[in-house]
Image (cartoon, rainbow, N blue to C red; front, side, top):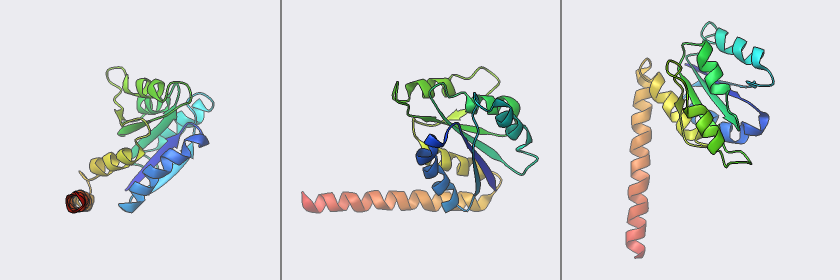
Amino acid sequence: MKVAILMGSDSDFPVVERCINVLKSFGVEVVARVLSAHRTPHLAVDFAMKAEANGFELIIGAAGKAAHLPGVIAGVTTLPVIGIPIKSSTMDGLDSLLSIVQMPSGIPVATVAIDGAENAGLLAVQILSVKYPELREKMRQYKEDMADAVVKKDASIQVKY
């Protein structure tokens, strides 16, 4: 189980790190790189074209502003691609979201919320769980733990009020 996370800039890392932490908590190997669709397009495309041969099973692309990185990656690989729109200083990430979610027919990119790194990691785990049943079991446990936490919070509020 090996996932590549590409980010357009190292300024995206604080968001991307949350995705890395989720993936690692499920035992998924992660390789993170800074590769820009605009500043290093040849390197980004080369990485994506060789990703499957290099043992990757899924690619996550995080980018802000014009946010073309996930789409460029998806255009040159058959691996699943998840896009994380990064909140930018100009349009609060709406520009990034629209750049990633408005892909042309034939080039799918699963897109999570603006700065939705945790969900990108969880979606990657769910996709990989089709091949790796142990991930599905870990995801079941994760969801049970999440539900238990909500029940405990509810009980705490009920006691207070």
